[in-house]
Image (cartoon, rainbow, N blue to C red; front, side, top):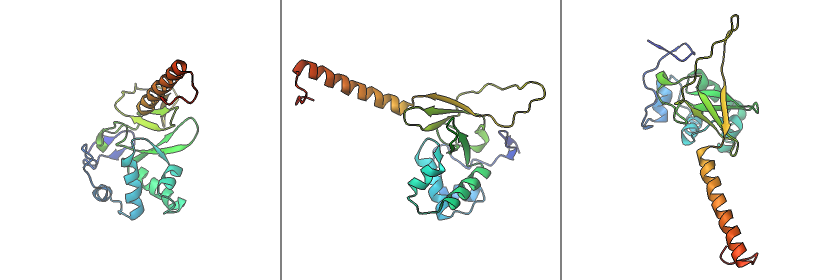
Length: 188
């Protein structure tokens, strides 16, 4: 059996499927996690979005159905079994991402723990960019690398498109106002 990433955990045979046609129940059972209602709902949240979620985000989306401690323990269980990983951004907020978000290969044996994360400065979402190759980091003699957090900052594709649409609409409104001269122009 091969070892995955730097976690020294044995590979598990395709517990994610690239087509995302898996069932949450079978995913949990394959990883020897009892499929309780909270576990199924939390795991589903990760596959409904393509960015990292904080515990507060998860609590909000679950609308208080479960207490914070239960959500925290669920996240710990998923992390321990390799279903999700932690992402710590420059604000210090811990977020979690499933290994299938942001273009990452959904198979456990291909997931890299040392991949790039991208934080959008507009929406504050954090995306995993597993498909971008990360150079090997060589530490000076005597230093031992334990964890590596790589975060790029910028504007995500969704916000870029939204910003372009907003700029087009505001430019159109400005142009029409200049032509019409009325602040409450009906063409706007």
